[in-house]
Image 1 (cartoon, rainbow over the protein chains, first blue to last red):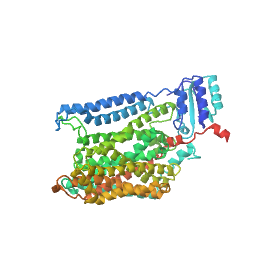
Image 2: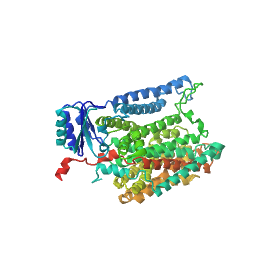
Image 3: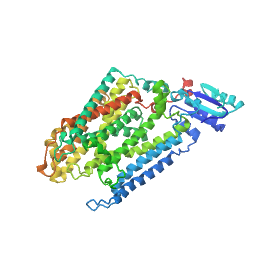
Image 4: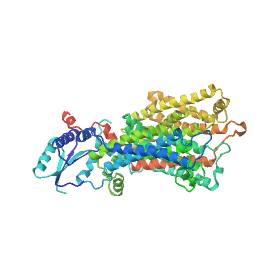
Length: 176
Length: 441
């Protein structure tokens, strides 16, 4: 996540100040900014993503469908492969008896695919994030807005805007 | 939690880590000693075979299967608290769910040892899983024992994923507060988590899905364990009552174990602000609810035995209460049905000493419940010529004791290296820092 141009990093101690800062950034339609927080806050997500759901759900659905199919197929095909007739007239492919395996495989693969979705969508492991995001305060008690790709007068303008929103510290770093 | 700040939460929860006290080292030493004794007993069994156990035909399910079911039951509370109560947005879960989840993982790890111990030839345990082989010979997927293999392995995998994903933001917080080798360890374990808007967005979506998957799984896993018994044509086992009865029992024992573990931990680590009376009282209420279901189940299975007019069915229930195993039955009833009743009184369920003592009794009672189901039914089957009295040998009891050593060793190591209270989620419970509040003040 390297950025061209100048980066402005604002540190906020208050949630309402951060929300004001994000609103200003959204109003200006800045294309490249990151917000960091020590905890999930719905105010942040709603402002930035405007209620658009995370695509992780597609990973979950795909994994669950695959798992269910794989589980039922495993039980059915192995029983057909070695046709072991069990007394009491049970059919080789017994839907009720195979439901447990199907359910377990649905849950297992659904979870595994969700984990893969999480890793892919969050771009984990993310050891190479820009330095401004790695401020230790952002995992403790402060929030942050990092705006990338600013140039010329916009740098000073955003520095002032973020301070006006309530940032306790605003720093500017050069081009990457 | 009034007056706490985000910074204070991180500080308080990290404070007890990496500084083992003498008491802690003593407990760890005891756990390792128990584990070593259990390991020795297992070695004896591997050396001489299952003959060192107290098994006698037709009783081949004894202490090992009892202990397997016991630990699977203990493993229920963690995912119940973290998943089901998450979906219900229950606020008290936040303080206790991390340690309860850890308990779940370690309890299932303990339980998973027992099928291998029980079959004797532990080196063949991989036969339980389907794998391509020359003879094209596959497992019987219509067998409840096979369902159990899938249920327990899925439960373990999903609980572990859920547990680790929940830990990531907290490991990141610890990474930023540590240095040296410890920092390096947390850096890798946190996967470079930085709490960006993008990360939190997908994280919360994924967490919701994990919870949604884990919820039916919690209910299903002990139902499947109960079918190990209920699918068999054995008196006292063959009942449709078993799944809800087992699930209620598992939640009952799991919540009691959470109290047993977390109460001393909260006291020793000075975490009363995070894990306090409110949490323990809520757990006690869960125990009261599930204990009530359990008591009803005990009563109703006896009633059905009598009402069925089936001499074999009624025979086993009469035998349990009055026969050779009556001491097991009455220990179970006393510990699970009578002693927990003291929690109906508010002042007693908010008293930490009473909470702890009663929770220990429940743990004992729940082990005896499984022993009562397994041993008495097998020792008293249809043919009186096959009636026996099974007594566990010192090897079996040694392995039982060793399982506690194994469990507590893992748990004690965990509480010293990982945050046992969820830092990010506790912060969610606090009123966020607002400029408006400061200005108003």
